[in-house]
Structure formats: C-alpha cells, structure tokens
Image (cartoon, rainbow, N blue to C red):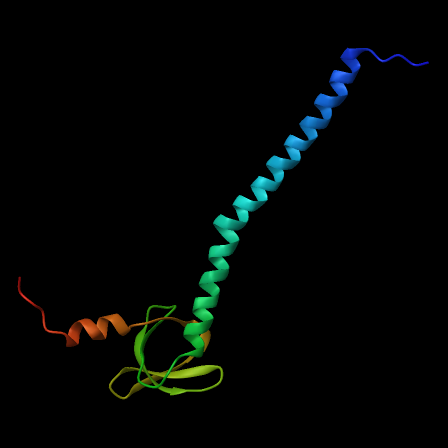
Length: 114
C-alpha cells in the first residue's frame, strides 16, 4: 500500500490549477488580441474593398499619395483621374484611399446663420 502525504497531494492539485490558470490567461490574451487588432483591421480592409468596387465616373477622390482628382474613366484595375484642367493621370484602383463626397455636399449647401 502506498501512502501519499497531504502535502504531496496539495502540490499536485495546485500545479493543476496553476496550469489551468496559465491556459486561461493565454486564451484571454488571444481573445483581447483578436478584438483589439485583428478584427478592426479586417473591417477597415472590407470597407476599402467596398470603396474601390463602388468607384464611378465623376467621383472626387483622394489617392494614398494625397492627390485629389475627379474620376474620368474606370477600368478593371485602374482609373483615370483629372487632377487639373486637361491634366489626367492613371492610378491603380487600390491606391484610392477615400471618396470626397462630404466636401462637395458642404460646399453646395448654403450656410445657415443662427
């Protein structure tokens, strides 16, 4: 018959609970990492993909390089931007960073005095 002291039993159960605690902290770290870094990045990428797919002739856009222009032609993988009168450039669709719709709407609406 093998006798085990209570001290040895207490050490083995604390080792088990320590392992569970470590695993729980690791899982919690992965969940926080996903919620704070991976998920927002995926959402931003989906929004950019939607923007690139919805580009139309006449949209005023800004490229990733900071160039503002109006789309004159839309092709499969590039667009032609008019950046000044009679000045057009060819840029990749993926380099369009945002559409400038709000700026146009603000300039067309008269300001109301309060």
